[in-house]
Amino acid sequence: MGRSFAELAFTPGVKEQQRLHGSRAQYQRVETDGGPGASLGPAEQDFIRERDGFYMASVSESGWPYIQHRGGPKGFLQVVDEHTVGFADLRGNMQFISTGNLLHDDRVALFLMDYPHQARLKILGHAEILENTPEAQKWVERLYVPEKNARPERAVLIHIEAFDWNCQQHITPRFTQDELEVALAPIRRRIALLEEENARLREKASKSASG
Image (cartoon, rainbow, N blue to C red; front, side, top):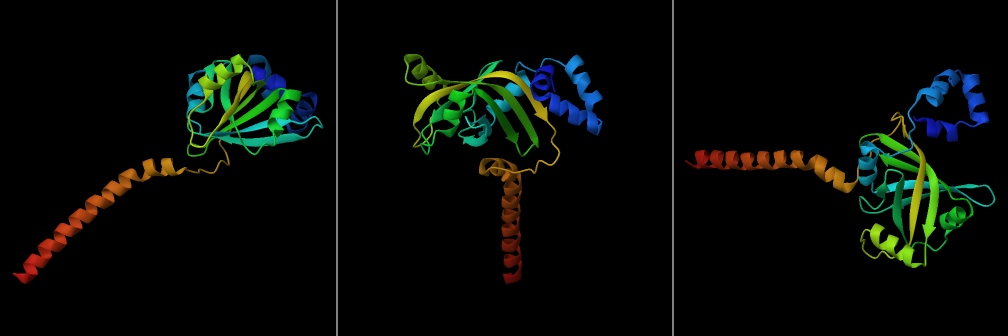
């Protein structure tokens, strides 16, 4: 965890809970001695590019939190630079809850999961929604990753304030169909070789029996 994330996440109420439960000294050192944790390094950028989905939290005008899952081809959440990520927002169910929330309060939290490797990255930032302008169209064209039956409507840029790698404890490994295909490929090749060997042995045994 870097200083930037601690400064945003450790409110007075949070610090009081840390004090009551014995972790305040540990996290106070993060606030004073930790790295900035506000610029995406190579590890964070590579991790983001490999994701095929993420969770995005916003806050409504009435103060209620709202979480939405966004999915797409790997790389649909793009790294613009070390301080910015973005994606082309596709036409969905026409509720516009996240869009309305972010136009009211641009603070946003992203939660990126790598279930097979039990890793997760949290990002805090400010969302910029670009729509119905020539600049917006340029960003949509830059960020859009072609997807069947998908129609991009706007571009969303997340200007990063802080990020944090979260503990991998209690993350249950889960695999997509593509990930399973890669993991099972060696086993399937081995099975195919064994089946070929068995076929040869059966043929040899049959010839010996008939002879």
